Length: 530
Image 1 (cartoon, helix red, strand yellow):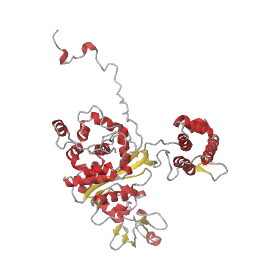
Image 2 (image 1 turned 90 degrees about the horizontal axis):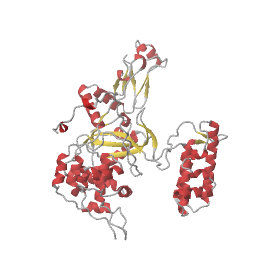
Image 3 (image 1 turned 60 degrees about the vertical axis):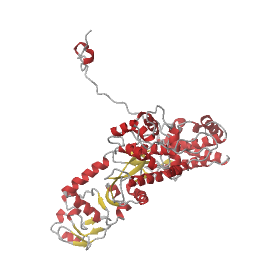
Image 4 (image 1 turned 135 degrees about the vertical axis):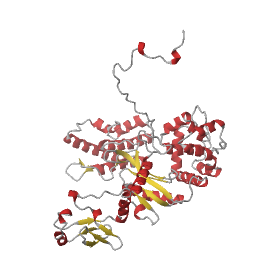
């Protein structure tokens, strides 16, 4: 039986490797993995990784899983694509140092091998085991111990690799995918077979790569658009009826179900004629190939399609003890359960947590213990017209009393709104500076108002403010192995294309910028006697 071989790279660095180790300044993870790779991938752990492979009586032994796991760790740290990993194994001596292929002119594995290993790793839930094993080794070697964490949690966009399409092409893509599955089951080719099956089903329009191009309508005309929508819904009914008489296949049924999902979320069937809904559905599907992609917004000006990645970084060591992934349209606070699970699996406890305001509503903050200190910029308190803001009212959390600048007191509860009596406010000498409402002044109390008051007080302390600014800069600064800039990265587990850098735009020079040849100074190497 063909089984993955045990990888036994040398433990002692060679002279060439020592030269590379000495030259590395910032990306110390490469040195750490080279020095401790034989400890990280013991024979017992390599046997765990080999369990992801199925015994086969034929073929060649696969690439050692330990080498592919090291490449996966480096890929996650540097944020490069699969194509760039293969290129780095030949062009980057730091990668060669870790993967034991110094001076290699050919990559030690192919792009398909790396993608297949990642799929097996995730399928067997060994990706978490790889992280746990790395944490165990770091603790054993003194990278970090059992101390409480000072960590920062932040999110960043994770662009999806699936094609984002409008309603018409989404439904056409899903139906064409279902017909392609039937074509493969009938023994036809993928492209020509889809066209033949589409003609057989009476829907030749679905053979085109773009349904909107096949329909050839004036898409700026609302009447033509509504007529095309009725045609597309008719195609959906025809494909459903056609598949009902075919040999069933789960992939074809799933594709038709995706088309029905797009119809239900984007089309209003309640009127006399079907019409596109106004606005965007709450959890709208935007891609057929990747059902988890969603529209997202990082800021007012930064929009993206895909997911959000949430990374918790240890502020003392720079290590990443916990990560989480959420859809792009999910609030940041929804990821903290996954973050807490990673921390519990690693046996870590938080002492300080530096976060953005989007995480203030999370369970990690709401259910925190007394030993966890939260650092965050509090919401700015403002009031229109120069009137008294909420921070000018006195909050006594021990007695639960809210006192206005004029001395009137009212009881309050977290998460509720305090409304001062209209008569009290009408007779108040400071009414003009407080409110113009005839019903009296109202003050909203946040569910975690105690934390917000603590954050505002901390921000007013000069030393604490400078420390928080340094932490924000450190959190935003790229890690030692992360590229400083680059194009959006596709989601792991999806087909990836080579990333081509954008062409550099040179600044135009004036016509006489370069002097004539007779006036140019020759280099010293050209000033030789003849």
